[in-house]
Length: 417
Ligand code: HAM
Image 1 (cartoon, protein in one colour):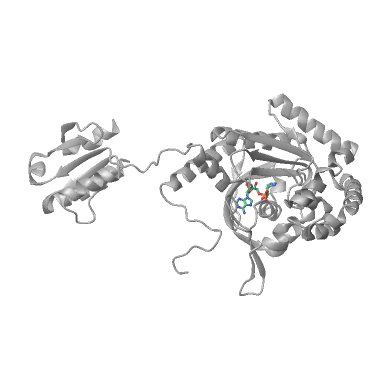
Image 2 (cartoon, rainbow, N blue to C red; image 1 turned 120 degrees about the vertical axis):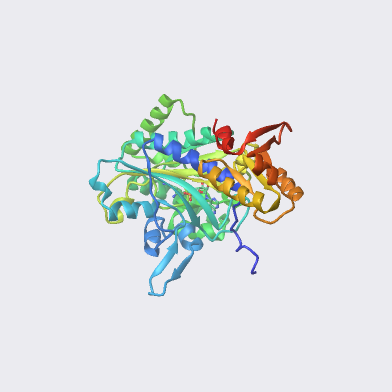
């Protein structure tokens, strides 16, 4: 146990970490172009925030939360997703007093006690965007276009956008009734979990992955046929804007999402490069959350991308960038004076932004040069008594083998050129 990760978690280190840093840089850059600023909320919140917002009929709240009592007797939960915390912060910090909408993005760890498999972990990383303060379908289209832009900038292909509308309460009440009537006819063939979902929130049955339930769901009535005039108009406008942007989509009435807070638009980007866990990005509108959490009535929408799934796609398609900690110069040394000079020179060069390295192990000069080769230094040199006396050393280009003589105090200039 002492040297074993908890199930469903992962260490991320070199060289993979360079892929993550590159990915995060792209996420930040694209977010800033879309006018979003970063928000960092705590990794844990009061449990009731998630119970109220993510919803007590969702699998997340029912089965998957990491909840514990702290020493003060409060019920605390590690965040299973990012939206609820952003909504809480929006209200607590009175962001509604600023010009609306407020666009915020985050890169955060999330925690869900799920059965681990490829693309599904217990601790995982999400990028998310939340736009709060508008009911307009233009905001839905904007966040969808941001999702598409991110995937494009990462060079991810083979992804389709699925959109749907689950309407507001009125539409959903009509649909719930139709769905319940239909499911009642098939009740005996539902899995035990879906029998419970049938009672609590029949919409959840549409999400079930059990094959016998899937067959039932395939023939179920479609939510789009039960939308009120206003909800239908909202959805039509969204489609019109996406068309004008040239963003292709599939209207998919089976997309209902696994969280209770959604209203109207819901969408997912689904990858053809992943196995069962193929949704790389999921989101939608949540127009009730801000009001119901204690803030003013304000429309909102957003999405989150599962970053482990993005990394899986990038790895599969060899799209990850080269590791970037290659050393520019390795300064080897012979003798005490050479050793001291190598340390001082490395310090001075690093100060100027040059990735220099030197021996901090006490290796022989032969072993030093072997090490320099292994870590992929572009250049190497060795400092000994002669080099110090002449203030000159041979600078070897490790790729071509070419050696040039260089004055020790001209090294920085050489690399900065
Ligand atoms: P979600 O669909 O629960 O939505 O999660 C978003 C994405 O996170 C998923 O599409 C998937 O890529 C990734 N993900 C979820 N669970 C796991 C897991 N156990 N392991 C690895 N990746 C996972 C939300 O979380 C909403 N807060 C999205 C949102 C933001 N809606 C509006 N604003």
